[in-house]
Image (cartoon, rainbow, N blue to C red; front, side, top):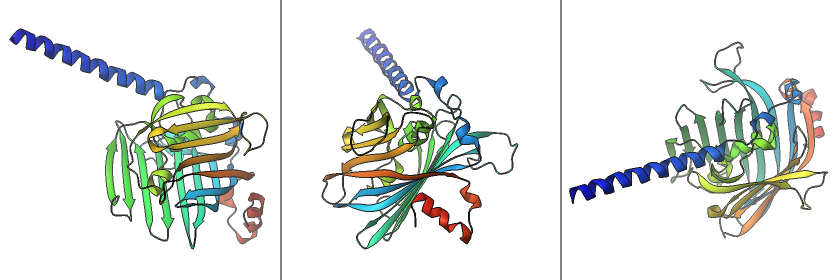
Length: 312
């Protein structure tokens, strides 16, 4: 009897190790791009300017789809990997080049309005840094504010959540590393080969989680890269990258040009809305794009430049 128990124990231990190894292999395959040698940033991104694109926005919220606008600002900058802030002093150790995205979305919901901003800092060297170093997201509306920050530390993600809402309140979390939906946008601009395909465990976008008051955790999703065959966006040889989340009944589709620098023409996002749980679709469509050192254009005389972006 003792021998039988020992055999069963050894078998159970071996089986557990096999399962764990399988999980590790799945995670590695899900996170690693297939063709890293084709990924990178060309001279377009190193002219000392930012790419600024304006989009009309129809935002799924509550029981309607609301009007608004979105702005995506992409720019490269030196970033400190230890402090995880911009390198402003030059020639510092632990500094690397990142592609930064500041995504701003503003929309009204009846009498009151929302302003949501997400920042993503993704290293150009994806071989050395397979995960973005940092993401932050904040949401402001007439009810209150929320803020979330994810820092890529040595062994895990350090997550801070600050919220006006009782069920979220203040949280400090240590979570396992996995793909962040928010970094899909910067990885796409480095080249479609940097996008995860097939089954993947992913943290959904901070904007979606905070507005829907959902737990920050990974969800199973499926990534696809296809030719765009829809009618919402016009252009030659467009591509669409999609992430489908069965558990959330949610799908994100990003439509972009098929040549570097892979300009994003817009996106569509469908999910059950708060209030009546009806699935509705958010749609954003690009209207204008400029390359501009906007940080130098901060005087009253520079106000007319907003018209070049379709913002008056």
